[in-house]
Structures are given as C-alpha cells and as structure tokens.
Image 1: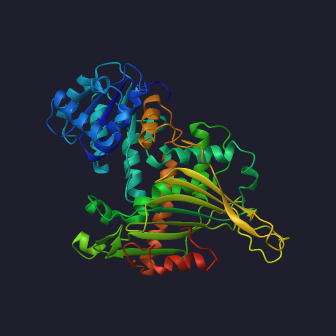
Image 2: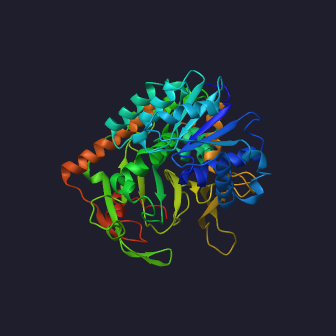
Image 3: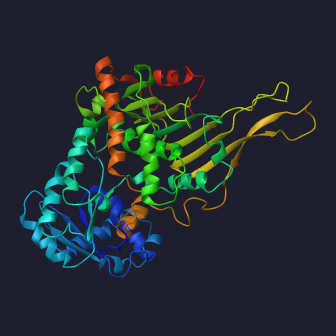
Length: 476
C-alpha cells in the first residue's frame, strides 16, 4: 500500500511511549517538512482531554524529550493535533473518533496499547469505517507471549486488515546502523563474497542494559529476557546479518529472505542456552537491589539469557551465532560482531595474528569498525612486528546525520507513506515465536532455572563457558 496517509490516529496518545517517542518523532519530522501539509494527527486515550489540553500535553512532552534545535517552530505541528476521548472496550467513543477523522481520508492507525485491547479496538475501528480499504494499522509489541497468543492477535487483526495494510513495528529496524547493515552487505563488493561459513568463524550479538525493572514490573516478570528481547529485536538483527541477498530493496523481497533464515534456525540443546537472574550489586557506581527485591517476591523469571544458535543452510553451516542479553549488566550496549577466520598460513614468525573483526555498534553510539592487522611503526624491531588496529569510520555524522534521530522517526514516516520494508510480516513473527517456544519448552523439560549473577557483571559464569568451550571470548 503506497498511498500517503492524510490522518494518523494515535491510540495510547497520553502514554509513556507517546510522550518519549511518538510525539517527539512526529514533531521532528514536521520540522523537516516530511509529513506533508495535509496530515492531521488525532490522539486518543481514556483520559478526558480537550483538543487544547492535548496540545499542551504534547508540547510539554516535546520540550522534555526533543532537543530544541530539532523542534522547528513547533506551532505548525501542534496545530495538526486534535484529541478524541475513547475507552476502547466500549463502542460509544468510536463514532466521535470517526467524526473527528472525517470521511474519505487515507487513515493510518498506531496502536500503542496492551495487546489484550487489540481485538476490541480493531472491531471498533471496523464497525465505524476506520478499517476500510483506505486504512492501515501499526501494532506495537509485544505481539503475544507465545505462538498461540501471537496467532490469536494476528487473526484478530487479519479479520479487518489484509497483510499489505498491517505494519508490525520493531523499533530496532528504524535505527540508522541497522539499516546500514543492509547497505554494508549489499552495496559493497568487499563484504558479500566473504559473508559465509568459509570466511566467518562466528557471529556475536549483544543487547546489554544497565537498568533493572524500572516501571515494567508486571510486564517483565511475565515475559523475561527471552521473550522481551530475543524473540523480536535480536532475532531481527540475526536475520539481517544472515539473510541471502534479496532481489530488490522492496518489502516483499527483503522479508522473504529474513523469514527463510528464521525458519532455518536449529533447535537448541540444553547445553546451548544459559539463563540468569541478577542479585544485588553495584551498577553504574551505585548499590542496587536484586531482581527479587525489586519485584517484592521470589521469581524464576530470567533477566539474562545467552544462546548458541545455528542456521541450517549452505551459507552458515557450522557457524555459531552467540546471542546474549540481560539487565543490570556493566554497560548499555547493542552491537553485532562478525568474527572472520584467521589467515590459513602466517609468514610472520612469532607474530600473533588476530582475526579480522567487523564491529557494528547500534547503541549507545552508532558506528562501524573493522579491525585489521598492521605493522608496528619503526625500524628498531627485528623482523616485522604486527598489531591489531581499528579501521574506524570517523567522518562526522557518518551514520546519524546532522542530528541523531529517534528510531521511530523513520518507522512513523514509512507508516504514513505505506512502506512496509522495515516492518515485520506475520510469518516472520510466527517463525520467531516457534523457535522461542521450543527453547522455553526445553527449559521446562530440563528444569532449567536462572543462575544468579551480581548486578554490574556480565551475567553468570556459565555464559562465559558457553562461548569458551568453543575457544571464543565475548567481545567486551
């Protein structure tokens, strides 16, 4: 679907995501004249607000979360906003919302609500003409807690919207460096001929957080690290690293190749996964409580997981993909490390040759570094002494542009424009859940429980052993 939206409806418009990400992103797009003159934005939530009160709410959120240099005049953006109070579980408010939108508009709807509310919301939209052929819908995660619940959500959405009008969002796909991974692989002859088992020894993907539960207590304890991070963000990163070259940079072609990777993931053995739960310790220079203390009760939910995954196809046969993610780790970092094989024969006696590594930093800084072997300068050394040096892309704004963008900016703009390339298709989501459900079933069968680790550490020692058994060290 490529028709540009004329109205954007934001469900959950007074929530945390809207304040921190959606409204600031839309304002930044407006400041760059990317929204188009006719786009109107209708916020809706249970709060009783007038248009003016919602505009004041939006202004306060933008001033708090968007740098001043990115706001533009802001007055033009604020004037795009209106508000319609709505309890999604009752039918009464939908008529007022439909009247607010008006007839014959191209409509894009963003659901930033609990997944349990998706079905009644979609039924209400459909009953009042807001899910017709001129409408598309965007779903914020989590899309279920397992394959069965995910299918139920997808079935509810599919009852009103065909797949080409459903946009499942994963905000990691909006990050510049994640998109640059596609460019790096498929716009440079240097890498793609080497991007296979013959030349790559292993791949690491790390998503580390320093925070604990914060405000997500109930959700997180029902989800855990595997479902919260691995099922969506990390498997999407893995798919982008491992996919075959698509025929074009078009939504169907890109997503076809990603789903092939996800379906080729081998089931894990018990020895190929480690789970952990943080206990009290020091994090970011402060003494912090353990997970059970924050939660207020004992729990078997994992706050850390490390996996050794394999993709059973020709390109990646025998290449392990090491994944780890956790809370209360030493630093906040998301990165992909492609670890190439060493040279087959060294001509430098006594020199320790380090294999080349491609480090793709996603957060907190977006960058790409390639480590190479080079000669140590000078003539005082006997023979030739080598050292590992980074080839770093140091151009200003190489990956972030003049301003560092919020990941939602690109995705909201694509939703408005109807471009699904950076959104997740139903068969991708379900392939992800199928693999995750099998891991969880294996944990239950083996009685695996999280191993304790100190807050501020890199997880339980078993995670280090998971990699070191293969002679691999985690990149830190």
